[in-house]
Image 1 (cartoon, helix red, strand yellow):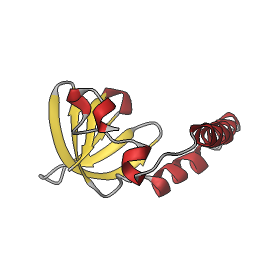
Image 2 (tube, one colour; image 1 turned 45 degrees about the horizontal axis):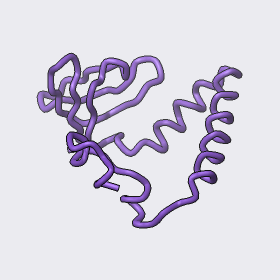
Image 3 (cartoon, one colour; image 1 turned 180 degrees about the horizontal axis):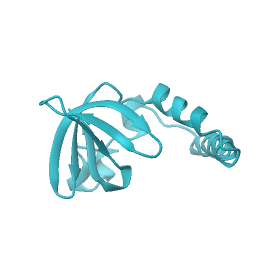
Image 4 (cartoon, helix red, strand yellow; image 1 turned 30 degrees about the vertical axis):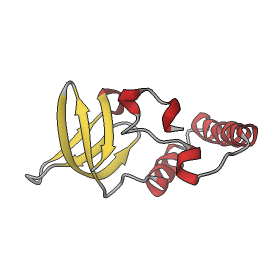
Length: 112
């Protein structure tokens, strides 16, 4: 709930309860999460990286969306045009330039 969140996160954070206006059985959610993490971990061990990457793109809620990112203290804005397991996020800025950003360098990420 918003009332339980730190003040500095209230405007940029959400939760399952907020998004669906009801409580969920957290045990079921955790069981499903572990099941799917294990499934994708096995795919990774079997070097099925193309399957993982395709699923990432298919289920992404940011692909083809405008976003604002903070990288090394700089705010960047643009459209997410690709996702890659090795390269990270491809951002197309307002000048039409494509820039790859490694996920570990992104300090903040939000939809615009």
